[in-house]
Length: 155
Figure 1 (tube, rainbow, N blue to C red):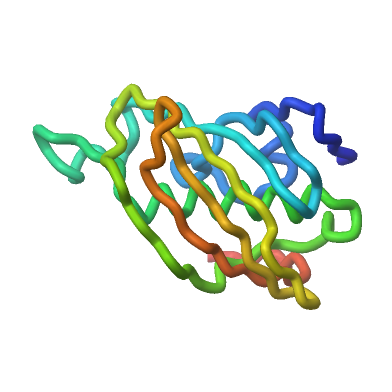
Figure 2 (cartoon, helix red, strand yellow; figure 1 turned 90 degrees about the vertical axis):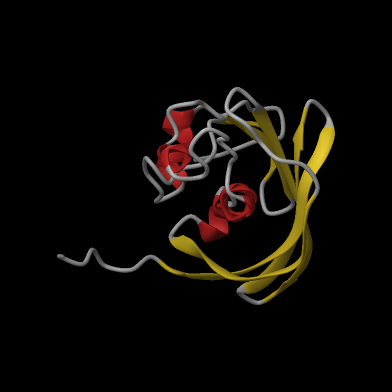
């Protein structure tokens, strides 16, 4: 799928690139992408998210690790939207410098951004941020590895 920086990418096109599916696909729309370099997108955090059932009853807060996962998925899309990587998958290889600044609640629009910091062969690092109403809620450096798509496994 050719992708340009001017493209707004909806959930159907995101699903063509990323292997994630509900309830673990954590991006609703991508609003800007430079394949292999940087991207912006968002997740509308709804009260129906399955993680709110237990995190926390009476005080629903989006788990911080899922905010970082959303940033990682955006970074994965950024790499896999580049033609040379379209037959690859992105693997989460690590995180550095994670900081959670503010909680994310049902009804928030989680604004995501990532920018490639380093790429050496199939291993790389993105700097990612998550914001709500323009305020920083989380930041992290996400390490990833690109690998060939695996064959489907029967479970």
